[in-house]
Length: 315
Length: 287
Image (cartoon, rainbow over all chains, first blue to last red; front, top):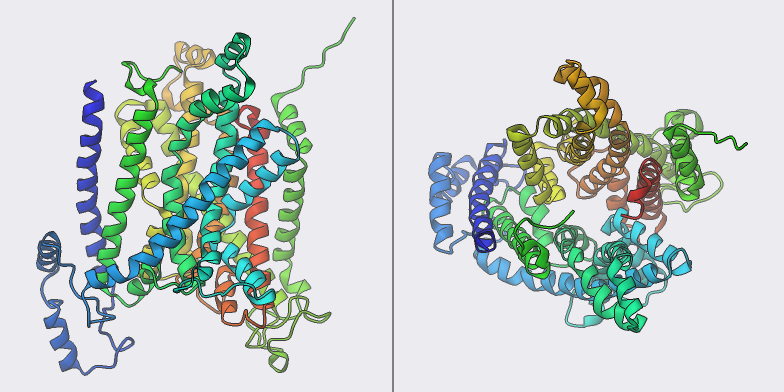
């Protein structure tokens, strides 16, 4: 019982530690590499003006002082001003950029997850039949092939050749969202199809299924009440890798479909040495990944009664 | 009287592997592509950077240019084959590095247990929580791309899987009777590791090696796609896809062929690796 109370707190503490370690490592890594945000290759400035701007942004101070000042203002909710668009604050920019990322990624998750689960169940029930082969082909393709390759195929087929759908994936009209959402949906679809199949098969071969059959329960209710419940437990753990897949995928999908979301700023802000925006994006990401990890852990813990018993899961 | 012929485990593994049509076909494809990449100068009309066909720039696929010509007059078929050198080369070398780092660490963790295991497992855990691609993008854009950096970055993330596979296998073999017998006869740890544990872990090592190849190829392609990977004019499929995007609305062949080759190569290497794993250990099938 002690374990159950302690677990979330230990995780939370380790998240906070990770958060600070990441901030120190990334901050020093970013500043230690030669080059800076106001070099000649990025904007043609005289040495005087450059020095003035550097001083204005505090970039002339020693690194340790810069870090402490930065973290001090971060704790107050001030993430600074993005060098690439000085007319707003980093918080403003993030507030403007998060809706496309969350709407498209979230919809992809909502579309892909049920389809993947259904495909996995169908494959498990019709083992070694056509459905099973299709499911395994779909999941192998979806897991191995990168998301920008799918996006490109979608753009070529539906945007360029058939001209059914717009290739710019964001706008007032939700029709524009169809292609990027489809690209995102591939990740959960493929992953859920594979894991649902294997965990459903595992659960189907457990002795309790035989007992329930012998007891005279209808097969259908065994499948959907008992087998599905048992199969669902290990499936919780794959939410985390899927979350990572969608988050990372957004960098590519947003570039392919020209979506002005968070992912699209990730690469440009590193290339332009936009320290405030880059730090904010990485810290936000660390936080989201950490929270997703903890939530997955907690969900697994509560769904699987075996982890709550002293001695843990029987092998 | 019945004669029962007992074959070696290797015999059954080989038979299981050849029964798996998809992985045999994948193996043949990889073999052909590797061969074509090696003899590329002999079977291509131009080198990867020669702008030999400027007058035919953006030409569609034809008999003379199988995959067409790109916007600056380079033969796409030649660039794709030279791109295979980059992709396969980076995949194999990174996988080798991953094995070189992952096997000793995994074996040490599995064999010594205790504090050693704890420390190595924490490292493995850190690397499995951080999204590798994101950190790789950050590292590549700060340190700069180039073949060597990409290999280093992808090995940095590739060793984890190998270490995990080897650790599990070593732990399982460590408690077997023949190892205890060797220990009872006075063999030291180094001897047991070298003579028993590592040879018995060969199948996860091979599988780990093969499965590290597509991971590294994907990482290279993704970084090059974002413009922080292989530097032009050296051709990389990821970079060719990104360059082709500007032309896709009319000259669709520019992004299409590198996309096809990237997808096919990654797919076949993964299927081949999965086939090997299933052949070595049929209980893992479909996991």
